[in-house]
Length: 304
Length: 227
Figure 1 (cartoon, each protein chain N blue to C red):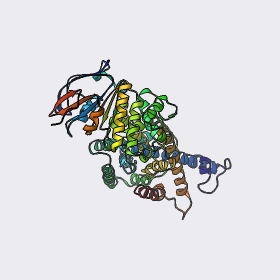
Figure 2 (figure 1 turned 120 degrees about the horizontal axis):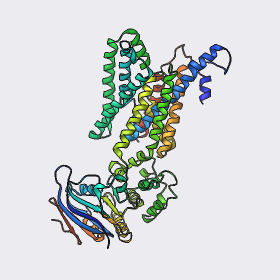
Figure 3 (figure 1 turned 90 degrees about the vertical axis):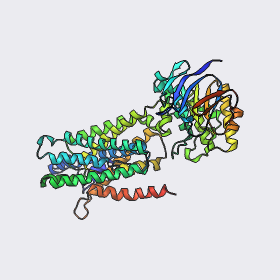
Figure 4 (figure 1 turned 60 degrees about the vertical axis):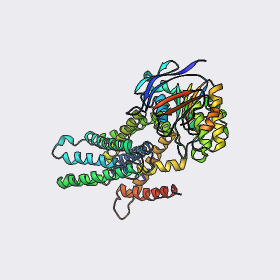
């Protein structure tokens, strides 16, 4: 899969030929593929965790406004960086992404603990998304043109241009979040029995929930910081995994989500970079084109 | 007979007091039937005994251990709790849910579900081996309640608390469940406390009766008439 990807996107690019091919391969293809791989993994895993925590199959980082929260924080940093140059680093951007995502998650947790898990959570997430969108609009109104262009391009979502230290941060954060959440899977699965019963089984539900939210904040925040708010992967993949594998072994589910999320990101990336009409389709357009019909299918299937 | 549960001057409630001054000692091998009108505090009492809600006053001792100083893991080895609500999960099997009962003992809950002796024994007691591989949302309410009891039994605790286990069951299933619970309590030397509205039925199988009326707690060896 992986090898096929960085050879395929546009025409061919052999292993070692002239310098230009080498440059393309190492500066663009390989980083881009790795970025897609890890961002896809991060988003689908956070989607899976959020769906379990909020007991709602339509939850996901994008719908719950977590991606928007991260975008807004990153927007602040990108646009602020022209006046405060110190801010313009991979670390500050990823930190902003994490804090933005985690902040929204905490808000949602507060709402859900008071008002329940159902439609209200989705509604709340959508409204938060709109709110942060509006704030972003304000932000771009006052921004200077070059920053604005950077920010607009970023907000369309892309796996391009994550190289060097940024790529390393993305990889470490994703793997870290994955391993961290992996160890909480047994407790999370016991929580299927409900809050009271799982507490009498010795699960510290509050601590587990907080840790898992921190994980999803990390995963979504970092992926969003570098790739923009990528839609649909986080919601579609966990549902696909459930339907395909019909298991509730959470350790397996987590791994399957990671793998399938990566696959969907890679496939979307290939489709995006296919030379159709001489333009590169933004990644969000592709994920929506694949993810949209799939979610409609899920909705209809669950409604029988 | 060995004493399992000792309750002294217990006041319970969420914010204000729901039930005043509960005093009771229970020996092993009893099926306790807890009755009272809706909202009188049956669930609150069970949850307080399960260490889910803190008591307002007084003390609870289980196996001569003060409940308030135990941590969640220690409690989970002494007390098992089952709630009324049925969970609807698409892809979880009966034996997997029963195996959740082994979580407090650090067993790997997903691996070797079949080979765990406690899980197997618990399902054998409730006679649900034949549905071990069925998904939870495909079984009947009666079967679900049996699976629920099996999960609690797999936890293998001396004290078992169940909130309205007979609700939603048909008549024969209610009788069967109460028979089973009595058998488990008496021969397994456990204390099982259940809340229920099926007073006539439960009075045939219970060995001890608790009733809550107007914030007062009454304990008796004979069924308590309502009024």
